[in-house]
Length: 177
Length: 268
Image (tube, rainbow over all chains, first blue to last red; front, side, top):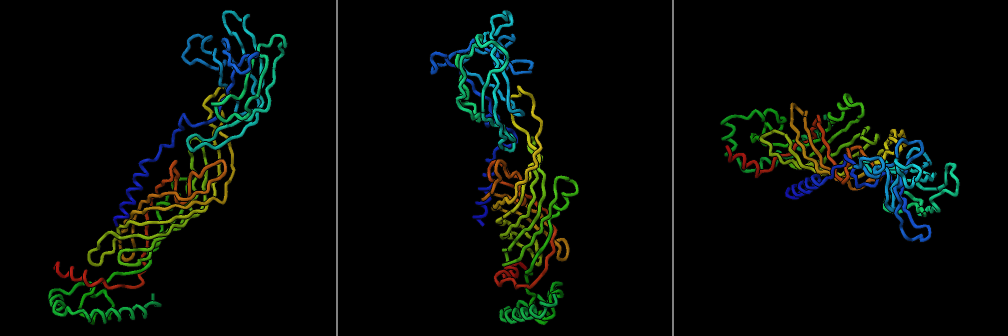
């Protein structure tokens, strides 16, 4: 009889330690974004800060938001970091982005736009009851798009460093300029 | 029942001899002179010849059905299920118990819709903690079970969790993949009560706390519902509930042991 009561207690404590699994925890790795790191073209191991880079998807109204709280468009859609996280489209096998360097609404003549198309394959992977599935990608190729003159490219080289886009903590693509 | 009649008579004959061996003759007279208990009229003819009103426990098989599962199908379109329950009295306090069931349940979560279908069997014992007065046969029990289920799971549709919706929202994806040959095993602690409502009919309910021991999961999916175990959680715990109506088939009787009879006498 005492054993049974002891067992019951163990069960009760076990139940109370149950985690809430109805809400998808923000720390759970779900559909990853692609991490692009920027490097000096002449010193490929040294990270380089981009200058007011705006990244805009093909046929998307706005650029990727880098600064949620910014009030001006210039500050909101541009970044000057050494890395950017950009999303791939889980419903298609390719996305095209315009990489606009030196972006400024006041002085559009200064900016330089390079268009890149990222081709990839997709796989839907089960995560959990609360999170459902996630899409992971394998990058197959990156090519230049658009009809810009090659002499005007600001990106000098692109390296598909790690084609498996599964997590966001590792560089997938290196861009040299 | 007729089949067992002769053997039951034989059994009673044995008890008869034992009963007469007990030297409680003076007490007997006292009882019979006071008030003949109505119970004596119920016991078979052989014992009437014996003037000692012996308390006897009935032993047998109790079979029933879980009304909760059965009726849930009427109001819950996502559920169909049935569970048969049975127990067999081994000793005064211990019962062998088993449940056998079938379930078909569609689970609709925010991001997943899946259907689990399968059968399960549970076996174990119940310990009756309730001290029945006279010829009552109520049960308040604690028991242990081992459960096993074999089932299939169909992923009907799912959503992709994409925190960054720059490329727009993704509509739910219809899938329809069926994962078959899944199995699970678990242990459970069952707490329950059964009350005799009339004749041999019992009504009871119980709750079960379950712990998943083995779980064969499908590739790229998870067992969200296991027939018999119910909904799964992040850990290995589960809960269950049943509401049963059962019928007791008496097979034989056993005399209650002497020390208890003395206790009963001293109370008078």
